[in-house]
Length: 321
Image: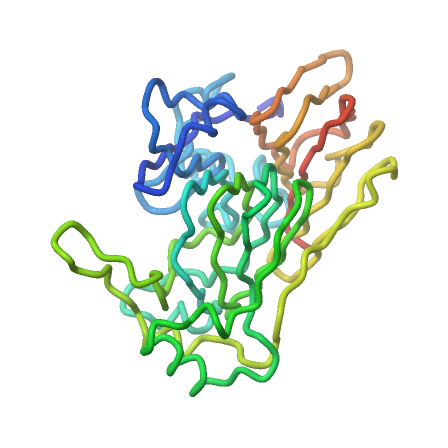
């Protein structure tokens, strides 16, 4: 089958902490609703499935593409049975709960086995008072975290900072974290939906009941040795790809100026445009991409060229070698 970029219909999620910016900033099909919190751009996790919008595979789920064309999509990793990464956009109109994610080893042995979750955030937009909570303050141990949760003072043991648009935050499994209000974020993560909620800011529902917490599991999987997490930043004046995160789960690169090659080495690549515009050239075929657009290049793709528009950012993600 001739290789071509896959476009998908986003899987949209509504919650009380969502807003309208997925539609207004990223052109997601939210209609008149004002509580859309997440747009899952590339997903193969249980019933949550990306649906191909274009080409010969139009209408198929990502899982079906994997089952029917594993070598075409994955190349040398054609033994994969599911898509290992998940790309999403999040609109945080209120601070999210304090969470921690398990490692692969822990998640594999849960009652419902899953992958662990290591993730990275690109901050698309941030309000002046927005906060990110990432990691524990220096010296905080298990007893201190547990006591803070019990007394409702968890914020006191968390490291926090005001992020700026364009910051990148890497959250390995075991890192306690929360996204604050006023953030629009692009997130690349392992394809997992396993989250342990440690603290929900003492909030209750209309009946006075708090949301369930997962204290035993969360306390157990927390990494108490890693300490505070700080933001990473690209060189805004650099041309070509910049590798921002390289870990055992994924590689995240940014292109903010000029053009760069992508594909042609027998591995899949995810491309998304959190800001501005881009032009993808595949031989003589040219595709224009605007903010919020996402494409998946299968491993069978030949070498392509992508060019960043003025004041634009292209995110590219793939598996490590």
